[in-house]
Image (cartoon, rainbow, N blue to C red):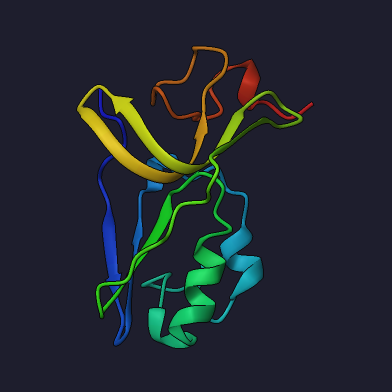
Length: 138
């Protein structure tokens, strides 16, 4: 079983955005935040040079699942929230932001944002994939 570590990189002049499709929970924060960069009707669907790097990084940080991440060409990356925050959302998922070490079947991963399965039925453990009751809309 894969943890969804297959990342696709979209390189721009000053920022690279990575996307893990299996972790995407379709919150659409990216599309709403910067439709000129994130356009699911286009290929490639992420065009990092469509906005200033700082603005793009801000929108990527809104992705609750961590499916979207970024690295600046100058080496800068996302700074984790401190203190780490864990909350249960209205459908039961655990939304975590901060300095995280997530144990996956492939080994530990450093994360800054994740939506974790709270019901144990996800096929993408420990991440939520909407398979069980904690990922269903009320």
